[in-house]
Amino acid sequence: MSEWFEIGSEIRVTDPASRGLQYGDGLFETIAIRNGKPRLWRYHVERLTRGCERLGLVAPLATLERELESVLARCELDTAYCIAKIIVYAADTDRGYGREMPSRANVSIGLFPSTPADRQDYRNGVSTMLCETRLATGSPVAGLKSLNRVEQVLARSECLQAGVFEGFTRDADDRLICGTISNMFIVRDSRVCTPSLLRCGVAGTMRQLVINLMDRDGEEVEVRDLDENDLASADEVFITNSQLGALPVRRCGDYTWSVGDGTRHVMALLADYGIEECRS
Image (cartoon, rainbow, N blue to C red; front, side, top):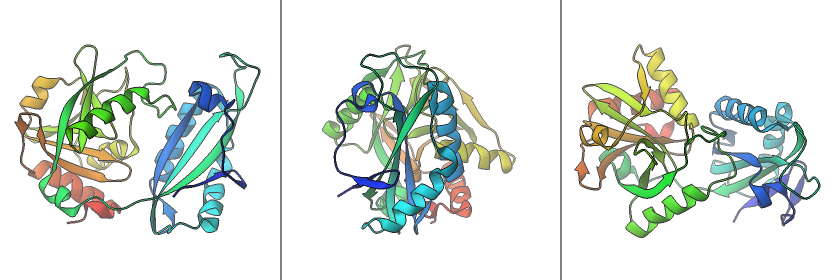
């Protein structure tokens, strides 16, 4: 069961006239709550701030952390390990696509129960696939978590039908982009690479943390275009997201990998930072 709050009062229904529902005119963040506190809060707020600037939305981001703390104190869920979803969407205007720029935004906060991933997945890796669903390129919201997620819905449905943990998406030019719920990294010859997300995809908060931690450790994560040939020649593959931390990948279709030193090193960096799921 989830609980939803509209900045100050609990809500049970969504207005069908909402621009967020009608047009996907907004953004969202999915935040891991651990021991009653939001994890990677700064990373989430920074991405949300960039997104609001790009979409021309004016939201009360300065007070958002205090609002989330209030919701966590009032909710009935166990906040030791759960998920918070923050949705920022354009306030109602006259009917039609167009609106003033910038526009006032509404903010909703939802809380969901959560359970940790299987420890065996962190030790042995997960199974993935290449999705048939392609991501449109040249998106003005590339890198952001906009409310328009139909491509991810279709791709994720492929994963569920195939019985795999995750699916990797590509664009129309066969470039690897990201997972349906994660970002992907490839390790080859001890170098760590991740796909460029300038054209499409979501730049995850855990992805950015990995890039920052590696840089602090004196190791560069190479951000560049990758394709299936890079996947085939990889020594290791792992995925990241805000809830899971980092997970090794053992298989993608006919490609297989072992859990190597590069992946273990990244997981150790995350564990030292406080991402407990990655602690061995």
